[in-house]
Each structure stands twice: as structure tokens, then as C-alpha cells.
Image (cartoon, rainbow, N blue to C red; front, side, top):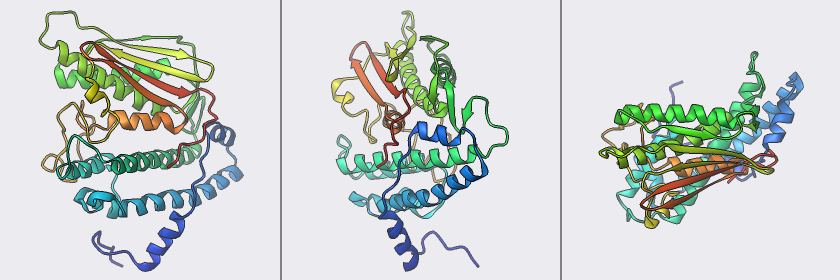
Length: 335
């Protein structure tokens, strides 16, 4: 039977099924629960995981589909968003970013509608949760699991090591963009560890360090002054692990500071438009411009009970405080 074209309407039965599942409430789990459940995977526990996933994914994906079909300001009809709705597409983040850019042309660029901001928070948080559940289930079936890991969760993750790896990756990108990169210095206890998802922390630190490197590099690019280091401090508290990323990149004006957690704002030139991204593959590891790094990093932090705060001194530099729950008892922050 020929495949259904993306432009063809869904059958009534499928629509009713989506609305049925979309009306159910998702079930959040904690990091600790994931660890305890997958610590000794058995045939029975893997079957239970599959059964939970079978129902839970249907609920979460249906809720996303319904919301995508009913977005305000005509966003549901933007070509890039229609691609997400109708076609299986792995580049969801840049594709949705393109949809927002298409919407931005129709709106006041200085103001992001609250409904759009709230939708994007829910959309991306749901995506983080779906990817976490699928990734964890698949990883538990790995016949050669990573030492010290339960699925995607590292039971004794070193935040110092993850910060080092993420910083090196960010410096590589900076070197590629500018030909040089400021140094990054990391301070903390190299022996400290706690249970967390290394890929999540890597993404957050990478995005924050990337922003700091760009700010410092551009501020001192044509200067004879010494280029200051970007500094990372890892503090292990009783409840939280806090990672502070500091730079002397000139800071952010108060008028801009209010916008950095929105999705229509970026201080850099946007690399994504209809000409450079016609819908196919694209280089996603750019230095800046999407305006998504900060808000999505905050969602990753909040997913397991953490948070991200930005404090800036215009004319000097910026401090980013990444708070992560050390206890692992915070339930997924589901929309």
C-alpha cells in the first residue's frame, strides 16, 4: 500500500485515538526511580519498562500532536511547523526554530507572545522527557553497558570531568569560528561525584561556555589587552550541585537580560533562515544565533528539579548559575 502523503488529512479514527490518549495525564518519574528500577535489569523488569513506555509515550506524543495542531498566531500553519506535524523529522529543534523565525516576521520582534513562550517551554520539555524515557529503555538493553551507569544515568558522574569535556568542545567550536579561543579554568573537587545524566550536563555546560567564549572573544578580538579566562566553579552542596560559569565578556544590558530566556531573542546573527535551511540537513553546531541555547538549557536543568539563573554586569561580564538536584528525588517537570 502506498504511503500516505504528508499533506493528506488524517482519518477520523486516528484523530479520535490521538484525542483519547492526549486526554490522559502523563506519569512523571524520578532519577532515583530510574536508577533503582534499572540497577539489575531482568526480563521481567524490562518487560514492565516496555509496557510503561508503550502507554506513556502514546500519552506524551498525543499531547504534543494536539498542541501542535492548535497553536496561536497561525504558527500551526507555518511551513516548518507543518513539517514537524506531518513528517517524521529528526531535526526538530532547528525546524521549530525556523517556524518561530517565520512567525517572527509577522510579529513585533521586540516582544515574544507569552502563549508562544509557554508553548515552546512545554513542547521542548516534553521532548526532553520522551527522549529520556526512550534512551533509558534502549540503554538498559545494551549487552555491554557503560561501567558505573544505569542506562543513561551515571551513578558516580564527575561534574568536573563533564565540564572539562564540554568546555573543550565549546573551545573547538570557538576556534573554528574565530581562529582562537579564550582559556577555560575549572575549580572544584575532582573526586566529587553524584548520580546524573552526563549528556544533559554536557549540553548545558557546552551552551553556557559557548556563550561566554563568544562574548569574551568578540570583546577582546581587536584589543591588545590580556584575554581573560572563562571560569567554571563546581560546588557540592547538601541539596544541590551548583556550577557557576563566569566571563568578562562585557555583560548583557538589563533590557536584553529580560529576553535571554525567550525563544525569539539572540544577540548573535541568526544562522537559520529559509535560504540557508531549506528543510534538509544543516550544521547544528554553530557558535550562536538560534537564541535557543539558554532557554533549552534551563529546561534541561529543570527537568530533574534544578534551575538556571543568569546574573550580568553590563560593561564587565556575566555569571551563569546552573543548579542541579543532588538527591535525585525530583520528579520529571512534565508540562
